[in-house]
Amino acid sequence: MKKNIWENVYYRLNDPIEIKLAILFTLSYADIPMSDVELKHCMLEGSSVDFMDLCDAIESLLAENHMKTVWRDELDKFILTASGTDMIDMFENKLLASVKNNLKHAVDKFYRNEASRKALRCDVVPLSENQFSVAFELKEGKNSVLTLSLYAGDKNKALAMCRNFRRDPYGFYQKTVELLLTEASE
Picture 1 (tube, rainbow, N blue to C red):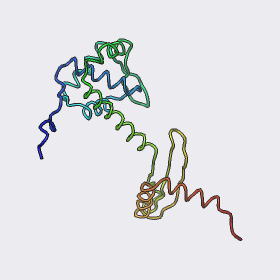
Picture 2 (spheres, one colour):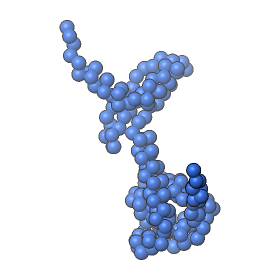
Picture 3 (cartoon, rainbow, N blue to C red):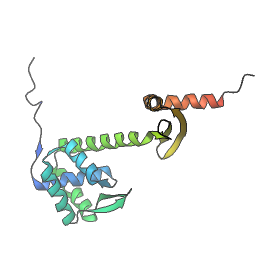
């Protein structure tokens, strides 16, 4: 079988203008304010860009007023300014389709993982030196579906409860609802 010689070839973003356009494209595609860490994560995940070049491009875009910082969720986050939006609208076609697709995939993957991470919470809460409880929370979007605190006893039981809840949170929710809706047979 013939080996695909293009298998390990990728496009490296070297041009400062192209890096800036990729950053603007990422912010435009995400369509929500992104923190410095989120933006850099998506850029590094979705493209092959040097980290120092990426940092320089971000600083340059801020200085050129193509993006600005706003305070959201107790963090400084980046958004596009009107000139940044105009810039990406005019020059988006200068980015390779593969670069845009990789950036879209990185943004989608990051926010899908972030949403699922925020939808489920299980905390072991110390009550005293050897006594623990577990606080469970399950969300659908912004709505809390389940909020529950249970006494676990020792730490090993609390950790086991968290592991089992994380394994099948919707099954736990369903069993809890069924238990609460079941009428006593007596």
